Image (cartoon, rainbow, N blue to C red; front, side, top):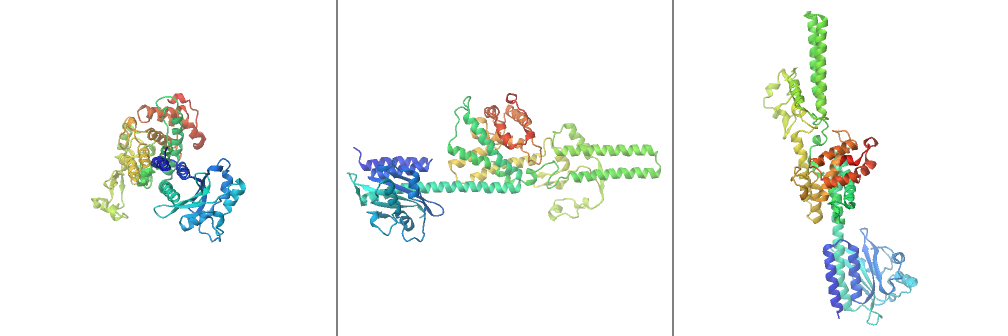
Length: 558
């Protein structure tokens, strides 16, 4: 027959195994304290936790002889929360134990007039249960911080009679409570780490919001889509994803990753993140080019007036020539302005026309070197070429446009084929994912952080292996990572706060995403669930403008 020590050892080993996995704290607390009273013939325990504001509150209790009669509500009132270190004439055994950080062992609680025994008196009044022996053990962690108090009541002999706590019983309960202290300390550290991580997220979001409100809004909306889509995938009963599920820790990691997936954009220059037109740096330089067209129009007018005064040709012919020149300038500027917006892709003929427009010149009379900073002047290799009047092209790519690895040339940027971002700027934007990964890798390495890094770091990977930064294929990506990719695309296309594009309707968005699925950008199985379970509509009804939500036939977008 197993001895008490055998039972203790068996239960302690079981508890240690649970501490390793450490998914839920409360069941471990209950198991440790139940093991303690069962093995040492003690009738009951009360466990009090210490809050951050130094208040003792009842967290768990058990009295074997009357457990079926006990009411949680009554017990919480009997042992109501007590503030530590208050100047009261009488203190409960629990308060005394907590305030002095010492073990309290009382043979008969009712024989101590200096103790507040009101709780035990009330317990007897309600349930007819008499408390005699009491052992209070402060649970002090390795940093000498009080985590709680374990209060044991009514030690028993072999006949079930109340006795005093023996030295052996006392020592064994103290040893078992060390496990409880470790559990509480680990839980405190885990909560503190989780709180620190969430505070880190909040700091990052605030920083992004200050730098780029649209990026901040994106980082707060993507988690909503991620949650909707992941839930839909879990609910799927057919196909290759029918067995997919997420643990509580997986959900937590995915939620944090979805908030942090673009944190690397903190290092992306603002003029790139918010670049609404091709000529935009700090400001939209289309105005500078428009002024040059104004100069050319004024020059045409001057030529017309000079020819009229010189009576070179008839008034009608001169007017026709002037009107034709103005019309051509207006057409050319309208074309340049249209190219600047990046709304439609440029063709080769469009680029040729830009080159032709760029060959037109105007006369600069004022010194280009005046008013420049020392750094700007230092970048100009032949400053004397800017000192005197000169003929300059209408659209310019100058040496000083090449700066800090970027090409700010006017013609160069206007010839960007699609969108407003040129290839150097695109490369810089793409670097944000590497920065995100490196920022997250700087956090203490835990299994949860590893998952956060994976989920956040894969949202620009393509299932066909053509994404970035690591060209992973779908087989190398987890389901949550592929969910992140779809959520990121959907939010970006439907967002109404992007300075470089108008928000798209659902039909436009789903057509684009369907093509992205077809070319191997998005995972086809998760995309199918996104469409068939109408995740897009759940999000749209809450967060999109009414005019963005048009009629959708899901089958048309599979």
